Length: 92
Image (cartoon, rainbow, N blue to C red; front, top):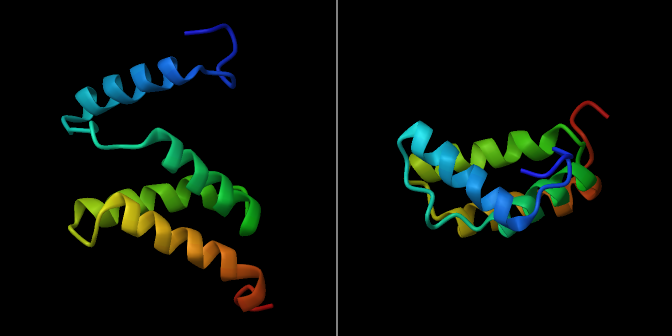
């Protein structure tokens, strides 16, 4: 890995995802790191920073539960994030 944990190369991210998937006993070969990072960014900027990783966790849980593909579920999450400012925040 490079010297700065915040600045990983695409190859380093691939290596991390492969190692973590093996550690968790799952197949991550179909995971698009770019799409996951895009979703995280969209939600973090459109809703709130902590909502980014929480959203990717929920998308992963939904995919694991057979609720759709990562692509379909990411699109749903991204669409909700895009509508969020228009919708308003609960209690606002």
